[in-house]
Amino acid sequence: MGAVVNGKTKFRKIMVRLAVGILAVLMAIPLYIAFVNAFKKTSEITKSPLTFPIPPTLENVRKVLESPNIHLGEMYGNSLCIAFFGTVICIAVSALAGYYLSREKSKLAGALSVYFLFGLMVPYVIVYVPLVTMFKGTGFLGTMPGLILVFVSGSISFSVFMFQGYIQSIPLELEEAALLDGAGQFSIFTRVVLPLVKPCTATVAIFIGLSMWNDFLTPLLIGQKMTITVGIYTAIGPYAADWGTVFAYVLFAAAPIVVVYLAAQEQFISGLTVGAVKG
Image (tube, rainbow, N blue to C red; front, side, top):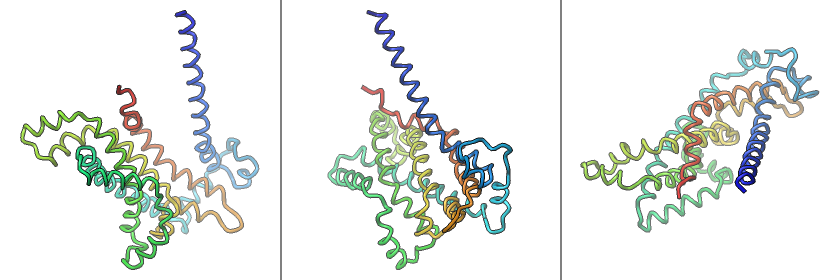
């Protein structure tokens, strides 16, 4: 009987690893396509987009870097500004809100929890028209602060939901001990709670930072700023597209995200799996 059970366990492990391997290959295909096509001519891309470039060409990369009509530095600067400040503001506000909602048992806290939960169901894309109308009257349309404000408002519900769930798993005894030592509420939050939620912070930062970095419509319509994703759009004309330049843009847009994820993957995985083994 033991041999049969061990055999079934090994078979399940093999099947799980096989499924994970297949999913990993499928997820890597877009990155592969972007990488190989960035070093091929447009004529070769349209004929065989999946083949490896033989010989590779740096013409597309050189065009993005050296063309006087393409301001890659400005695009990177705008995208980094949006992703950095939007993520920092969103994490600062949502961490405080998540801490309050996870510890407070009042009716107001319950109502706010429902309010943020509804925010997860309403994508801010559907409110572009009223946002444009409102921003025109306040002078925020076409400004970086207004653009960051839109991104923060669109990401804060998810961030609060993540922080609230994570902070609920932290034992109250740690905060009670700090309280007995004379620490104030804000001091407890900054010195006790925040260091313990680093995995959640990394997870939230990657999720919302990635969404802000990759967003195309919001910078184009609300901020009217040239970001790296808007730059991809400029290489696509009404009748034809310079696919070599498009994939070079995609390569430049994806490279920072891949580097950040590889640097923070342990914290990211830890934040996603919190509570998975708790009984």
